[in-house]
Length: 197
Length: 226
Image 1 (spheres, each protein chain N blue to C red):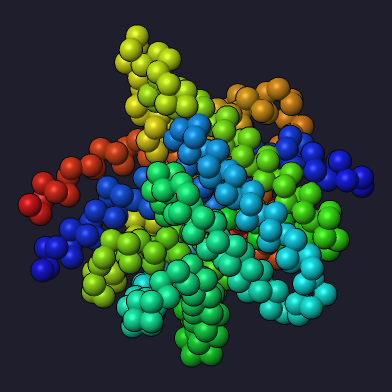
Image 2: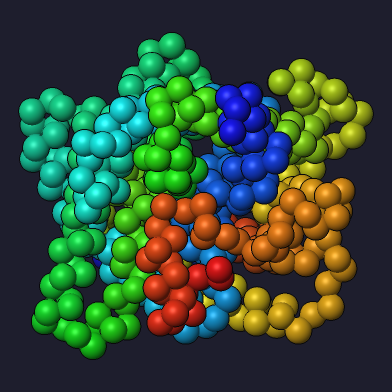
């Protein structure tokens, strides 16, 4: 049981990393990774919302949509749940946990249209995870996102100082760096199976 | 602005992916072959054109404060329609694209066009804008898909070209190849347009529906590049 949960989590952190292997959440990965502070803030906010979204959408799918045979409403319902959840969390934090709101507040509205959050909730259902597995999968996906953001922020800070040929300045060089980072994460395939099997 | 320029500006001059750098997630994920790229492009175009029309019709009815959730509901409705049509008529393509069909909902291009164009313009103009932007996205996906399929498996539209002569470099079908080919494409565009096409040289939030929030994030935290 425990090893199964850990395996789900480690797989999504290292092998099936959402950003570097499955191309989910590329926009914040490329847009907010210029400074280490903002990369960490965004990563933590995404992890937080992912776990909450997984906790909210799994019961809705199981007890409402599946029960009344309206599974086709999944896309509409999930995106609305995530959007309203983000709004509620923002208001709650602003009122009761201002310190956390100051750290994460500005990133929360941006997360509504982050495909990684909607992606993790749909993948939980598609993979047939139970409630606990869904939570671990969502947490792992968030940690994987945070890890990719931190690593990439480090790479980009070094790249600021590099002398890059004209046409490659800006976006192309960032994408090529992401390619190399993604290549290095491919080395993890098979590692997780080896540890837990 | 005449009708023809509304239609054509999205294809080359303001290509949503290659020039405005929007919708990078589905662009990288579904461009593993020319067929997949075309399928994703056409489904996105259908959603974009339909949602632009409906949002343009409702633009005076939707209250300003809750416009983003309203747009998302309209878009999600059309995505569900597309999902059903693909399950029924194109099951192979549906399973190849998988998760990325429902994720059309959160494609920045669609929400961006709703916010920047359809909410301010008439029905016919919005429809043309949606079709033009959709064509630009499809074109970009098709070019990228063709390159990745040719290098990655030595085929074009599943017909072997060099597959039997040279061992294909399957890395181009995987994630690193996606980032690499995208980077090279943008570098090529920068080179041939001498830096005119992509003025900002960075990932822009200008086309994104959440640009206002993003600017706030930047002021407070250095959140976004713009």
